[in-house]
Length: 134
Length: 134
DNA sequence: TGACTAATGTAATAACATCACATATCGAGA
DNA sequence: TCTCGATATGTGATGTTATTACATTAGTCA
Image (cartoon, rainbow over all chains, first blue to last red; front, top):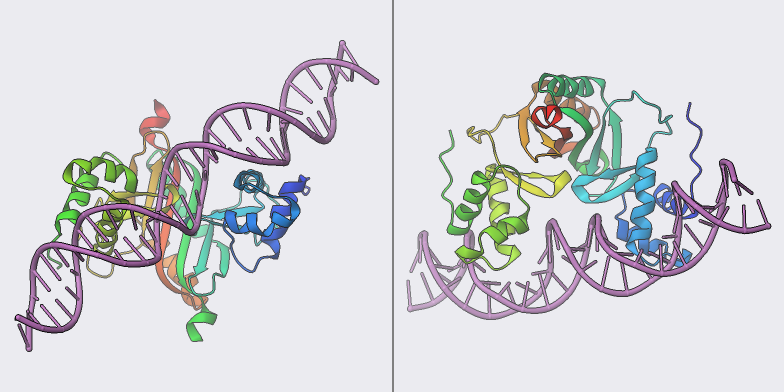
């Protein structure tokens, strides 16, 4: 069981900003929201994000160049599967889920092909239930 | 059975560039390779790519902001599953594959959650067999 | 012809990310 | 306590990726 990471000031500011947000935020949006707290340059955000990604507290959504706080307060120990994201293009909401079958299937492909996987991105774009019926 | 798309001059130039390439290329790399053919601005590349993506002749790799010619000369009719990409971070080579189980699993999640999927990205980053043993 | 649509050319700008270098903060030992 | 090393931070400049806005050209078809 991992204990919570000690965050530095900037890391905490960035993480809190993401946690409070409704949906994913771009690095520059985070920067703007933290100008009042003394942030002045993109690198301050990117550096904090880098650590938070390391710690597994934040995810990067590659398909929209944005970041979200991790939805699951899971212990960040080893052995969890790949995470998929469903991103609504109307409202921006992101649902995070993990599927063992998909994880397994990807692992099969990689092992059969001698591919050493380091990171996997699964992002589903579309329209969420709420927006679809609206 | 879809017949080959009639490509415009710019579309053909961009497609040929991607086809000849060993691996994925960024839009700006394509631009540089086409300066001799009269290309002068990024938009010329992006516009051609947009069409080629529509036609299914090219894929975009979201995790590395690059583009590849589609590996399968498959007919681009309906009914094919989601495509996954394994991207080698050493040599840049991309392997493309399609897995029915993964496709099925994603469809199950989306239908259970009322999510209307429009596009799905599956990208595996890592080191390919050739580079791993080298 | 005229009018509509698709494709193109070009410059400017926006959005996203990193490099390079200086400075500060903090803990582990001498 | 002092000093060293590691980590974190501040800041400007730059690099990279993508789009906006507007003008022009080319093809289609009534």
